[in-house]
Length: 608
Image 1 (cartoon, rainbow, N blue to C red):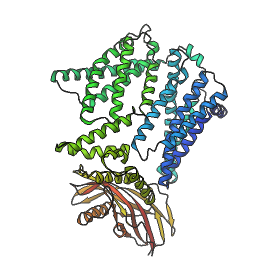
Image 2: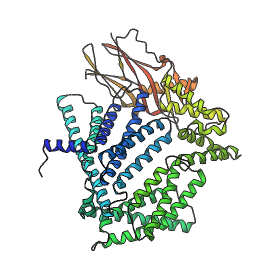
Image 3: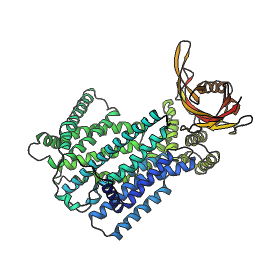
Image 4: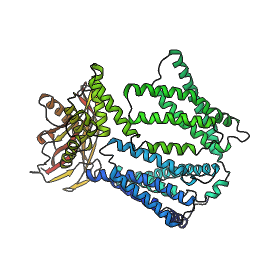
């Protein structure tokens, strides 16, 4: 096979830029944003805004691609195409100011639903009111195979370049940090893969209507791998349904996931074999395509029972709403393909797209219905005299605050919760608080206003955070300071020595018992090591806190005098002090130790 020349590759790239200018620009911006966010020293506020922009780039790529392919397939002129592009950009700009996934978890779900909907839109946009089903199938087959090839090429490129970097590191004693490997992955996965994929998007939609090619490998995979696996899962689910009927018991929650998984892969199998299912010599495929939807009927009944059980006990949440919608969609699709003579496969992506869009905003959306359902459940639990119901109250309060903010509890208190929440964010911005600290403060505020006592569900462990009370590092007597607030560190040079810092677990032996503890390791010119026992410091802080509690700054977050957050060490040439700025981890109560720790701070150095 003749490899393309650099000139040919450059011409192909230029043709992609001419055809999809905004998509290439979005891919480059996304790559740059991700590349930057993978580095060190990004401020929290800037990080949050750039992360939101990165997520919108993902939406923009698929939305703009769907609009462009629609315009091309309908032979729209350049002016109309740019009007559609401008409309897409305006929608994304409005979405940037409308959503805030950092503050509200519901907006994370919204972004996921938009992404799902726009990917579906790419699948059918060129065939809205035009083309035949064969062209629609050939178009999506091409996109599917192009995506797989793009991912494969990117993986091979990454493996080859990563091995080359590793060889340079080992052979020439050049320190190549993990940041380089991560950024290489970013460039290839977000940049190269996207542009390579766009180069393979079909342009002649008339030819697709006439094309009859079918990849032999796709038939072999579907006929001998996918369909047999689907048959095995179907047998398991049907046997489980018989078990339920015999024992007369409601199904377990896991069964809904299995049924949805079977349905998704089953529908995918039917889409993959669509052009050949009626051809001679494909008896096994023909049999599967005829009986798949018939066999879905008992599984849908089982799915509906599982949904009723779950919703009846715990109300509707976003995930259960989606489960309900998918159960209804499966029922409708099964009925359509069983009784309709048209058998239009475009119905599958179009119907899913419509349901996804309807689930995002409005009174019928997943978020509105979930909030109303859980607020009604909370009201019922508060009014109940049952001790078991009382124990469920904190979990519902947490859900409402996490997903919908403090304002979702307005009906349970006279305080203006919107103002209270705004004050929390103003204070957090002033103190440069992390997102989890803000979330914990909102939950603690909700518990205080509703007079709800939080139940400590962490019988064996709890997550604890210790912050420096003053935030000031006293440099008196020291000559240099190394900032350790990021996990990626470049070697520092002082007094002719090279200082390298590593965070990680080291094995410790005490009383014939081995265990791994978190330590900070300082390597001096590759010859000498100095260890700072952060694990010991963390356990001492817990012990001191149990004796005399530190000031509380949030949920299981405490401020500690800086004098208690210092670890001194010395060598023949230097005196060191590791000053901890922030330390957090999961404390195992029964073992009185941390099973993992995360920390940052500063290393102070002076010559003896």
